[in-house]
Image 1 (cartoon, rainbow, N blue to C red):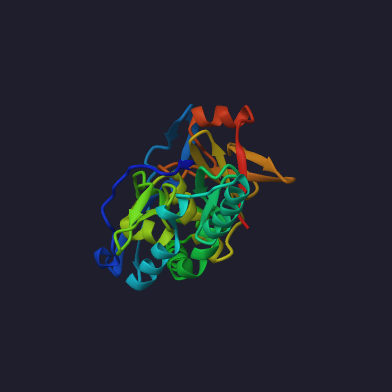
Image 2 (cartoon, rainbow, N blue to C red):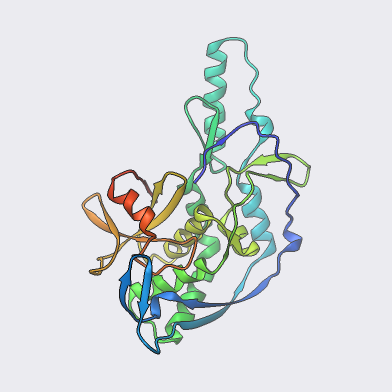
Length: 282
């Protein structure tokens, strides 16, 4: 999770929809299906002979939808270059920029010099585009015998975890050669098309997938420079979870392969200390 100051001298290569394949065959192992006898710190002790369920499905990405998703997100760097003569002019232009930015998925702080991702905007904008893909993953899991809601969530979480971990750039370059501020995130369709993302982008993809089929409510839990997802689910005895608004939210680490309800111990210690911020996803 990053806050991006404007104006940064970063030059990135353009990304175009023509580079995306319409059909992607994805295979992954669901880490939630192995039989864990106990945990020794961050190490799971696996029952002898236990294996993870292998899942496979085809997802279809419309290049035009991918391009529209990319174009909808982010603001031109030129917007951040404010010229003013009085403090009132500055205040007015900051207010106008804050409104314009929010319409493109970017939050601007009150001082007008920090930008971050509007997570709710990204998830809401992506739900319709992700519904068919989420249904495809759910159908794949059901064919393998998955029945419970937690099991289906696990199939989707492990699908997202399988994507390569890579930090997205802070800017992209559009077709006109203009630098577009994206605050270090990509839209879920772009994340899928590129098959990579970091904690923010993977959490956004996961949230968009489960919310698109009304599978489970989601929150984001931010600590320092990292982000988890939390799902509104009754925790199992070994689950790591947090209370929020009178309910328990089971934590999911999406940047790497971790089962539902288990996060790395160093991050868990931060959670226990209360040094985290909850971001509600409507």
